[in-house]
Image (tube, rainbow, N blue to C red):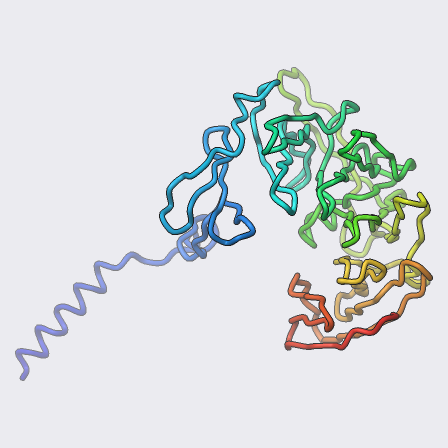
Length: 346
């Protein structure tokens, strides 16, 4: 018996010595304990295929066999030839929105040139000739594309390529329309701050007034430059003034806009905005500066009436996520799974 115990202890000791010691770097610098995931694929709507950018081509793959079944677009074969940085499909998957000439700004923000490719006709059209754009997005029916440029919001009707400017007051370090300031990009994790309504006829968007936010100064080296240049941008530190947020809804048919009444307290966050299934009801999440109270609000985009449908409080903080689904009921997950019956009016 003692012999067996000795052998067992010997094997355990050898196994322990063979194991590598866990270091701080395993948690901070290496993906040792990180979740493994698959990147670079886009699911097709039927769930049987996916697409991926391979050697400047958007290729369609069979999910069961893993084999390529079709090249949807070849950037090098287009006229003009394009180096595809990224792409997205229209909802019916008949058009592809191609981005090229990618220029990063901060962690998530960027500028690019966009092109619309028709899969059936194999034709390509440039979205705009008036400078690079950001966050170009198809309308649900694929007939329009909205984007931001120079802190303003625009959309293009694809049938005649007419460009319409929705906002005009955008200015660097002062006013941002349709995209986010540094705080929202970094802390709330998004940059596209405009949203198509389900009926394709409205655009909800954020407006950030960062004119009162203090500036941070840093030196920026441009490629090929001998000396750095001063770069100033709005960077609120803890306890300092944040941007003042406003939410607007623009009606494409009337070219009129309404402003959501977010209350008299402007020292708040609006971490998420989304449309419900009703094209006349916009869901807005309002959070206090301390981030321990979250309110879900519904804006009637016809009357302008707004109401609070749920308030969540926590002694520490309320987490922000995208687990919110609208149907006949609104369901969402924070600390608990909840369901609220929708009504015809806010």
